[in-house]
Image 1 (cartoon, rainbow, N blue to C red):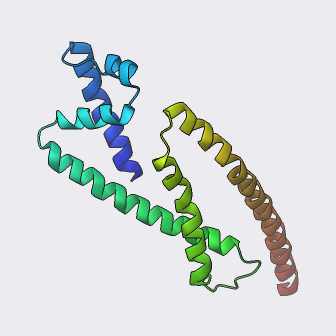
Image 2 (image 1 turned 180 degrees about the vertical axis):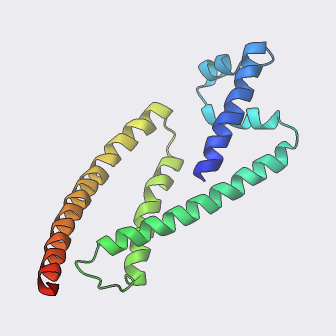
Length: 160
């Protein structure tokens, strides 16, 4: 997913910039008129040879990327929901709840008729609690490292 995104930015970005600079199309003017960035991206892809195949490949890779991303994020979030797992997997119901919670935000954004700046503002606001969780994870990591170091020192002293 990340590699495909980078390739698409490089290829489509340079391709559309060449079309804009050569005067073949006016994507900047179209964006200024409509403000619809997604329509411009689709119109750039439609100028490529085999546009239907490219669009189908984009849809397929997006579904695969998001499915695996949401599955792994839900697994990680459900693991952090437990105080102690002891190598076990989290319960499927907990993982399902995290899947539902993680999918609600994108669905809400999909059905709103908001501009890109509104979506960016909502994303920044929604990122705040996630940032707090990330800070707690970092603190927990350093506590675990300290505990691991103490356990390692104790085991080394016992072997001597």
